[in-house]
Image (tube, rainbow over all chains, first blue to last red):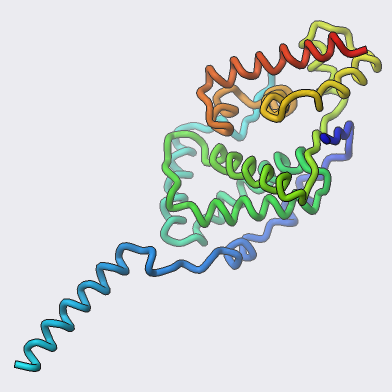
Amino acid sequence: MIKIYIDRKEVTSAEINSRQDFKKILASLPEKKNWKNPWFYGAVGLSSVIGTISLYFLLM
Amino acid sequence: MAMNMMYFQDSLRLEEEHQIIEKAKLNPSHFAPLYKKYYESIFRYVNKRVDEEETAYDITSCVFVKALTNLSRYEFRGVPFSSWLFRIAKSELYQSFRDQKSQRTVKIDTIQVAQLIEDFIEEYSEENKAKLLKCLPMLKENQLQLIEMRFFEKRSFKEIGEIIGLTENNAKVKTFRALVKLKEFFNKSK
């Protein structure tokens, strides 16, 4: 059911803008998951290769 | 018809917005100017469609959280960023109706009703006003939102199209059909 209001008092701009809270918006953002970032895979891959090579030479 | 001026911006301003968005993709705190710029218009859009003001504030916050969360997917297409925000607002609103957290509401004033009645080439009277208010809820949701955006919020067909995902021409045709339907209900109504 749709409600219809006619000539309802409008909220003033001052009232609306006083409710702005950008810090709260930033705080509500979900934490960034590193594993979703392609750079993460690059960094992990590179360290694995370096680790494997280092281990190979160490054991030689 | 007076238009929503927030939508019409010169290319310099659009480019400024684009730069802010690109910076905000790397660091969300750069988004602050866009939050400040569009907070009021998003709140007003939401508040006209829900019964409780507090719910409108909550939904407005959700719109910005969602926009920032998905900002990496946003592609600049030379149109104001507000269109993307209104699209998110529309989807948050319908989610809230589905979850029964708020009730679908239409908030209008007598002047807007009078203008719409004049578009029907009818004379404004208390009787016609009552008839129109009775007919608005008879429209399908997609027709009602077209009437709201075009006649109550004075949006251009281009902006309407961007918000609901239609071409400008298609938005024009569908709005015209919605108006015809409303007129049909109006003429049948006693």
